[in-house]
Each structure stands twice: as structure tokens, then as C-alpha cells.
Image (cartoon, rainbow over all chains, first blue to last red; front, side, top):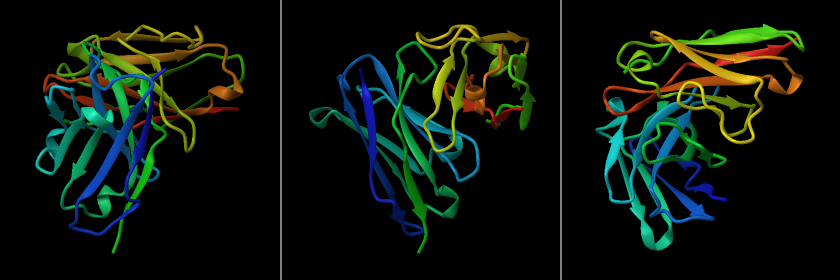
Length: 119
Length: 110
């Protein structure tokens, strides 16, 4: 079955760009799915960041839209998240997840990766 | 886009039933049958428990059930077990074409 694995730097300096990648295994990123990012600050709840379709179509959380971008690399079967101008408030566990086309829920999740914003 | 409203905590004894409520607006919970529920144990990834208000994914116990009335969705867990102790999050599609989560509810099995 499909598995997801996040990777990227665990420490990012304030004002810099957070970059994460989610590798898809056991299936193709070109399948009819939306590929999502969700984050969870320490001790807090889940926050939906956005999603990308293999064609490149995206949906982002309005309050993050100016700082977020997502992309798909079909050749590597992976998708990515970039978040610019980070602050301490962006410190969180970042999860990647899959949502099937026509559905509005995430049925496959990565294990998550912790990103700390600190100088 | 405000977070959906959930109680911070609920509790129950083994064997009992509990219900967690998730309140939104007509622009999210009330406007679409696209409410989902997730269980999250500490330091683990969320797990889908209910989707499209009432549907259970394959492998999820039928002790878990979902419903909706107006702008409020609910998750009911019957026959509480110790392993049900976790944080639960609701989520809904919104009129903006995005998803929004609830603040989460900590379930304690006493």
C-alpha cells in the first residue's frame, strides 16, 4: 500500500525558507490523488496547510497563502512544501498526507517530521 | 477561516459510550457532508476514523460512528476501551475549497 515519508532540515533560521519533501512509495504520485501538508505546533492541534494535484493545481490555507508554495516531482515520485519568511510560530511537526480526488479527507499519512525555527 | 469548535476534553469509563461534538458554520460543517474524524495517539500520525460524516474506512471498528445535525457533527465511541484514549480531531471541507480542523478533544478512559 501507499506509504509517505517526509524529509528535510530539522532546524531553520528565522526569516529563512522551510523546505520539506514527501516521498511516495507503493504507488504513483500521478494517481488521482491530492497530496497534502498538515502541521502541528508543539502541544497544539492540527492545521491544514494546503494540497497539490499532480497537474500542479493547488489549494492553500488563506492565511498562509502568501508564504506557501507546493510542487510535484513526477520523476522522483515526490512532492514538496516551501514556506518562506518563517518565524518561531512555524515550529511544528509537519505531516504529508494523501486525499483521493473527489474526497475531502486524508487516508494515508506520513509519520511526520519536526521542524524547529530558531537562530 | 476559523477552526472548528471541539470540547477540550471528554472522559468515560470502559464499556461506556461518549460523544464528541464538532461545531462549525454553514460554510463548512453545515454546508457539506464532508466531515471527517481523526484519532491521534501521542507522538503518532493521525489516523482516519470517519469520513463523509458517517463512513468508516476498512479496518476501523464499528464502535466508532459519526453523524451531523445542522452545523454540528459528532463522533460517538461505544464500548469504550483503554486503547481509545487519544486526541480526536474533526475536519471539514469549506466553501473556500479548503479544509479546516477542529481544535482537538482529548479523550480519557478512566
